[in-house]
Length: 467
Image 1: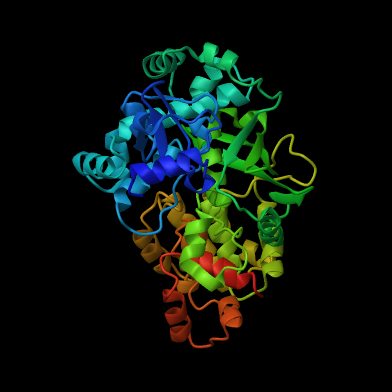
Image 2 (image 1 turned 135 degrees about the vertical axis):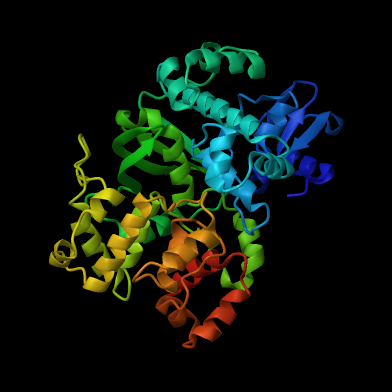
């Protein structure tokens, strides 16, 4: 967003939650930067400077506020293709997938120089500075919310060593991690983190959508909480465990099993996408107009892109309930999840595990040959490097998906909407959208949906909710 000093100050003094995460206010008299919703006494307008992201505020010499905690602020959803390279780089950094500039540039298919320039144009700082801020804020979050040893927090935040974290804390925040922990609220006994969002969020509608699609043994909805098993590769190691998510005011509380302590960045990033926590309901409502009956609906993403893509293939031309049954049978082939709560048993199979199956094995589960062929082709492609995450290039991935056998425009676009979490993606020629709009012609439906660009994923959710 373009930052206007008068508009930002008005949002700051009114504590307007619509602007939470869209800008940060640095206060010259204190050297601290805050979220617009900060409960502290408001500063004079002439003492305020405004920044579009936390890294830019820290680069200007400001320290994060201990009251409003900038690390809790929701991020910014992307609604168009502008600054695509910067967007993809930011997604990778927020997921903890940043080793060095050269490696990230190679992954994105650009030169180091182009990545630095594109990122600086969008965020005002280099990718390295942005990554350092993200690591510092995550460490600050874990210090405030958990009882983890400081050395474990340094590793979980991606610093590589306690010495490096201590050095950056002293340089940026003028205090030590242990002192920050003493100043913060008393941490919870469990490994519990908080994720903020811009209200409203219809938690019941969210859980209902996920419950209808929950994979037996992998996910469950219980007592207004979302539970699931987790298996992911992070920093060269496999991490496996479980988590639960509950609503607490304008935040979600996330409880993690101890086995996921060193994989916090990708887990929290995946949850932000699954629940679409970076959305701005006011902006979506303004763009969709009368279509919005419930501003709290979100364009839900996915926790695991491969899992979601397999689920999309299984759902081709059958009911949601039937696809869920097939997904549960496949999930039983995944690795058992030790110490999982009742109702959870297995982690979803990895791409390599699925690729090793035969069409006969899938057929015995009830998967017809055309879908089993598509599943095996997708699994092989992912093991060979096909990326199904929000940091991927949507045009490139969509084209690659449609080149695989058994994956047509509907499946590819549904994967783009959920696994890649692209706000303008929508399931092309979808039966549910036809039923909701009364339009039978694919061309007529596409023309109708074009009016809602670049928010067609949100339009899809609102139309589905009318069925």
